[in-house]
Length: 182
Image (tube, one colour):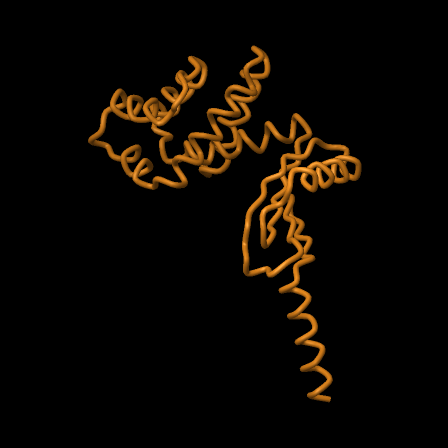
């Protein structure tokens, strides 16, 4: 069976279970942390996929990744994934859980890329306007990229809104080249 389908089933089952018992937000926080750890430290995946490392050692390593004590629910879930030999899907399961959680809670994740840091007042304005337009709660993630020179680029779902100075300059350059060729 396709790994993505299996990961989706695990993530949905985890969300349904967490929702039923009221700890979906705690699991969200833990799944988000684990997914980001696995992104920044690829050696975690290598250890998890090693047939030489026992399940108890894998669990010990996973638990040590967390700064705060791990919830019993998420601990049991990780053990289940390890026992079912689905270690290679653990990060995908976490990412899918995050996605399903945000979908259920009507949370839209928006990445805002700017050339310089954005002040809190501007962030609040952006969040309020987007919430009004989308009828969803906005989770705003800001990133700084000096290469856009000014303005901003916003990403959400499958959309990209490019209002950067660099983009405008490329458009002007293209127009100039078009007029010179004709």
